[in-house]
Structures are given as C-alpha cells and as structure tokens.
Length: 77
Figure 1 (cartoon, helix red, strand yellow):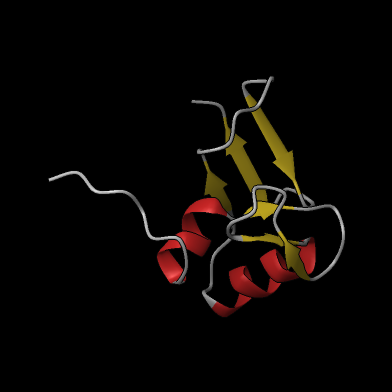
Figure 2 (spheres, rainbow, N blue to C red):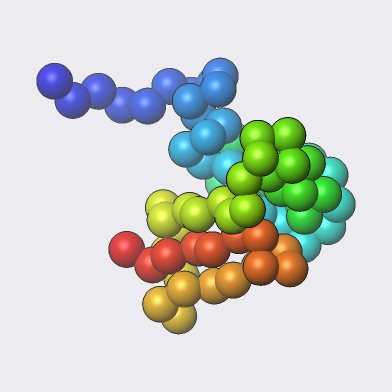
C-alpha cells in the first residue's frame, strides 16, 4: 500500500535532509527536513562506527559526488 511520507518527524528528516557546506544543522532549502554540515556527518559516522554515508534521493548532474572529506557519497538515480 502506497502512502506519502510524513511532513515531520524522524522519517521526514531522514528522507529530505541534505548536506550543506557549513557546519551544524539548519533549515533545508526544500522546506522540509534539515541541512546538515560536515561536523554532523562526522559525528554520526563516529557514533555509529561507520565509514561512509551514502545517499541517493537528490538529483545530481554528475553520476556521483563525494563530499565532506570522503565521508559522503551521493548517487544520481
């Protein structure tokens, strides 16, 4: 059964949040979710004993973008 994702809460943040070049968290350009900086990514990876965050929901002109000191990989779909 298909249903729209929620407009707030954890699932919304996971789905619609995007990396941003500056430190910290801030409003997303999409109007939902949040923007997260390299420090947020670094802390998330360390806290969860991970090496890489892979995302694939954002339209990217190149096939992929590696960011935040090789800590994020964004794939075009």
